[in-house]
Amino acid sequence: MMRRRGGPGVLSTMARTAVVAGTATAVSNKVKAKGMANAQAQQQQQQAHAAAQQNQAQMQEQLAALQAQQAETAALGGPAAMLAQLEQLGQLKEAGVLTDEEFAAAKARVLAG
Image (cartoon, rainbow, N blue to C red):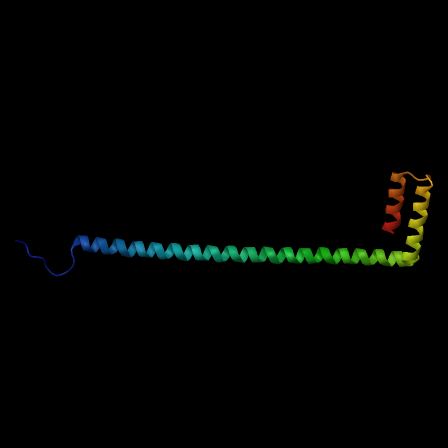
């Protein structure tokens, strides 16, 4: 009978190697997945920030346009003058001088400033 000399056998060495390799692969995959999740979260955060900046820029443009329109209206006599023009247009429409389309176009011109 052959006597085994100290040390693990071939099968136990292969089994141990397979367990170590499998564990290393599992850990590596988890690290990759976590890194990808972090990268995706960071990308989403950057996109949200960019969208917020774009929205803020649009709001500032709209505010500037509104302020310009208000300044133009004030220079032309303010809301009272605009209201008087709209009332006059309404009277012309009621009198039959203006059609619905002409009234709408004239009203849009008055409101546009």
